[in-house]
Amino acid sequence: MPVAQEELLADIRRVAHEHASSSLTFRQYQQRGRFAPSTAMRRFGAWNAALMQTELAESNSINLPDDVLFENLLSLWQHYGRQPRRAELALPPSTISQTSYNRRFRSWSAALAAFVEFANGVEPAPLPTLAQATRKRTARDPSLRLRFQVLHRDRFSCCSCGVIPATTVGTRLQVDHIDPWGLGRETVFENLQTLCEPCNLGKSNVVHGNG
Image 1 (tube, one colour):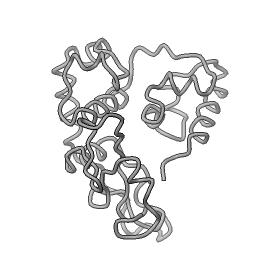
Image 2: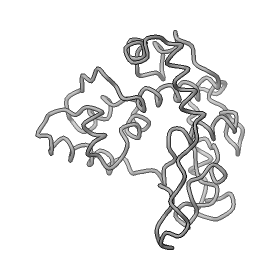
Image 3: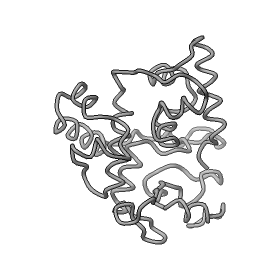
């Protein structure tokens, strides 16, 4: 199961308190937070939206980290079911403007090329199998790269009902375990599938497709 909303917000408040600040940047949370800043962005739509939920002031971050810029591109790719276009950065669900991509990569085409290179890269290998039997070799949540690879394999559509965001307004896709992580399975490409929110919520913690 994904991290609970209150747990995520509580951790953001904790890091802000450690900084003795009324706001918090991506990088500050990335350095001390328990979760990736992109997790909050996926949950609330934007980093500043997450801060508003904690009653913190909006962040004026300028130099956004690559994982946040790439997370926004993945959101657009998933929404349209194809490579996003530059003009679509100005439309929902994008939460980052073209200016941020130009500042980091010098051009939109260079930003897309960097994302594709990252997405097609090799996912770091999990811990050796000789690790203690009780120790998980992979984290529960799939990485940005792994999510893109699974979504792309599944053609940005729900493996259960076939719905796709590009043709059904309001559809949100999630990358979920086939066999449950909580029952000892791992977060690897072969054990992940794309599901829409209703199909994912309708699952129970059972091995082989229903976990």
